[in-house]
Length: 279
Image (cartoon, rainbow, N blue to C red; front, side, top):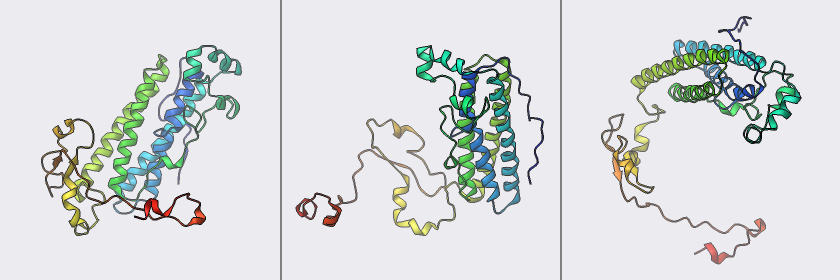
């Protein structure tokens, strides 16, 4: 059961309207790594979570908090759009640089939502459920959550420097602080799960099933110009699970044969002759 409370998690009060900034803020609302994504990702992971209750409770706690963050950003965008008009769209487009970069004010905020937030990114591309990860594997999901929070916090940090509005910056600082904690939280969960099950996902795949390929698990192939990659810890030392040592292969050779596909049936109109590939 969800219950809405009218008060926002943190105060939202901009210093002045700024329709161009409202468009930019849409990215951290409805973009690939926006608040809508983490909200849906954590909630679906929580809905589907089996096993220890503490993980589900954690996911539902943070997922529900993210619903509040979506509402905060909607309030922020609405305030930034206060008083915006089609004339503002035309005025913004008068500056060639702004028109080239931003294309003016987001017309959807004028046409579709009546000066409100919309579930899209900063270019008007609709939010997509394919952005979320809810695999049913806790370690895989927690790592994905860390990635989402990392990208989301990075984008808010960049937006912070794109405005001098102290009211907007106050909201961003609160979000940055919470995103920092969320990174701590996912890191802690990842560490605990790795200690329990190991660092490789999925831990449940039987090791004996890949024994014949075991030597291939530790090699770094030099497949780009330069050899600097051999200096990293991924090219020497023992693997994180302790099962083998890394090896740098400076001149890797293919171990398979060149493919020789057969000729398709004539009805496929491939325009090939049998002599091309049948030998």
